Structure formats: C-alpha cells, structure tokens
Length: 138
Image (cartoon, rainbow, N blue to C red; front, side, top):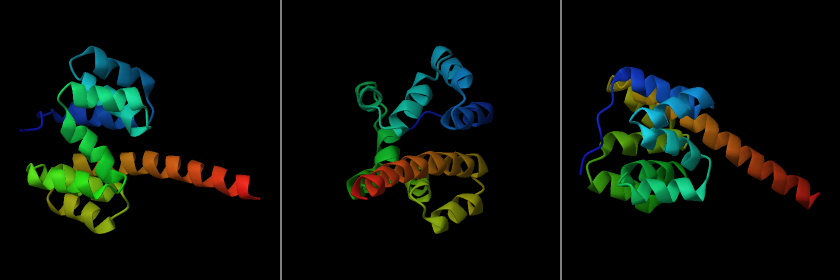
C-alpha cells in the first residue's frame, strides 16, 4: 500500500484548503484530488467524510487524522504500513514539537507546513470543545 504522490503546488493548495479556503478545497475536489478536499471535512469531524476516505481506499489519510487525535492504534497502523512520514505528521499535528522538528530535519517542509495547519484546526476544535464544557460546568 502506498500513498499517492502529490506535486508541491497541490500540497500547498491542500494546506490552504485545510486552513479554510473553500474555493481551493472545491477546486481540489473537482480536479482529481477529491481525497484532499474530503480530508478537510474529515479533519473537522464530519463522519460522512471519514467514511468516504475509508470507502474510497484512503485509509492512510484517515489514520493520519486518528493518529493526530492521539489514537495509538492509528499510529501503529501508519508505522506498520510504512507510512512513516504520515506517522511523524500525526505526532506533529498532536502537538509533538520533536516530531515537527523531525519533519524539518528531513527537509519535508511542505509536509511540516501541512502538519502545522492541521494542528491549528485540531487545536481550535479541541479548544472550542473544552470551552463549551467549561461554560456548561459553571
């Protein structure tokens, strides 16, 4: 099993889509990179997008999200299936700064940038969820 290879400009577009650029996300979905557009929804906890990634043979992208959410089984799956870059990214997205430094050390700056964008989305979701819980307890 191997992950699809993407040109740098597509990785940069994906990063913009992850950060919320709807036009670029839609462009990705209509121009042969549907999995990257759907990933943006899955990252934001949309169950139908998560199912789509699995049903359309992109388990590595779903494992990246699950690993970034701290799921040890997903991290192990990435490692066992030779998705070492995605494994390191998942750790970086989950606020592991050593993993982020490793991406830069490996000269994977585009992937490191993607990890930072995913981290921002993930942390924002967690902050919002935790903020709601705090308010409901007061």
